[in-house]
Image (cartoon, rainbow, N blue to C red; front, side, top):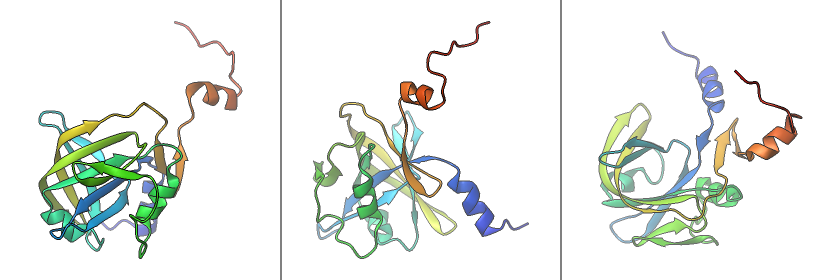
Length: 176
């Protein structure tokens, strides 16, 4: 049985995902990067993460051979960086908001910054799952995350704001 591609896309658009920028350098030291919304933890021991990349993405070949890459999990207010690293034909590194982690470009002010060592690439349809062992973690001060949902960037409102928006401010929680 084949699932309709449009229906599948619509279903997946309803799943909120983190927004991260993955950066890497090629064998000549040239930086490459892209925005991903398929980033997640894979294992606690050892500390492994994964993200998915389209086989035709400009970073795909570099990620298959890189020894290390960096993941910057974006915070609310970093939509401009997410868009810049998602755009085709744009110099993704010619703009504000970057510094380095382990010699790789990293997004300043992001939620988390992870330096990862290559573990493997697993072919999966028209994408590949890239896995890495986390070798360094930077945890800047906590803030709201940037998420991708319904084909757009969103932020999560703090609990107090959610209560106010839903009209339940001051409402009592049910007991027992």
